[in-house]
Amino acid sequence: MFFRELLMIDYIIIGIILFSIVVSLLRGFVREVMSLASWVVAFIIASQFYPYLANLLTQIESEYIRNGAAIGILFILSLIVGAVINYVVGQLVDKTGLSGTDRVLGACFGFLRGVLIVAALLFFVDTFTNLDQSELWKESKMIPHFGFIVEWFFEQLQANSSFLNSTLGK
Image (cartoon, rainbow, N blue to C red; front, side):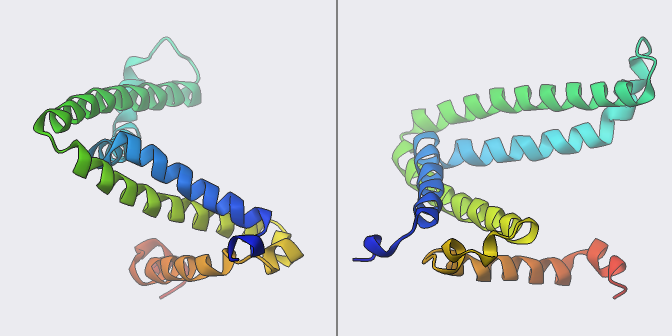
């Protein structure tokens, strides 16, 4: 009976979460976490060390293009190194016989990631479009369940972000 009351937007939300679960189930928890860590580390490396590489790229005259190239090179190389490390660690997990547990934990990780992706998408749609005024949005069975996630996230941001605190004059 519950599924008969769902709208297309509810099925899209469920689909995004299920897709995230399946991907994480297939890859496993360790690979998913290592992949996420690789992206974070690549961002940090590119943002912190690009000036050093940019100084070596003297054949590029434009400073903006030189900096952009340095950022891109560092980011991509960091992701490649992260992928190699991820592969090696994934092989170790497979060899230890923990792949079943790894995949179940991966599915849990995928569920959480899917919920966060949906919450972020709904936040942006709510903020930057008028879709929240439509009947589709108002009659959705799933959308109201994501409101508390967005509210909690912004409460945490306001309480803990030095950037927001200085911007808001706290």
